[in-house]
Amino acid sequence: HFIGVDSEGNEAGMASCIKENKPGRFLSIEHLGSVKDGQEILEGNEAEAWRGSLENYKFETIAGGTKVSVTLDSLKEYSTYFRLKWPEALEQLKKCCEEMR
Image (cartoon, rainbow, N blue to C red; front, top):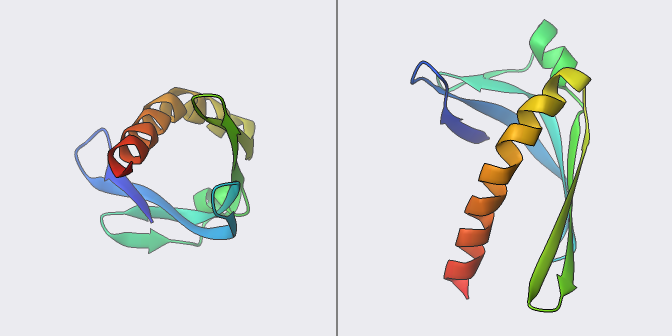
């Protein structure tokens, strides 16, 4: 589960699974549905539209750090959401990685 708080202050997020993980090189996340108020929603129109979408992260070592490339395989209606949220999420990932060094 990838959980946050929605615009109304309720717990919400995505129900997903790790489809492929090559540590330090590649991560693929397959979406299954959503989570609202602590409950998985894996059935219905919203879940069916979301199910099977993939977020793929490729990590490459470059001079002075790591380059992260992200691709998305989902409905167009979600692409705007991800374009807005990815910079925030990647900044959080960067902070976590730097703290672990």
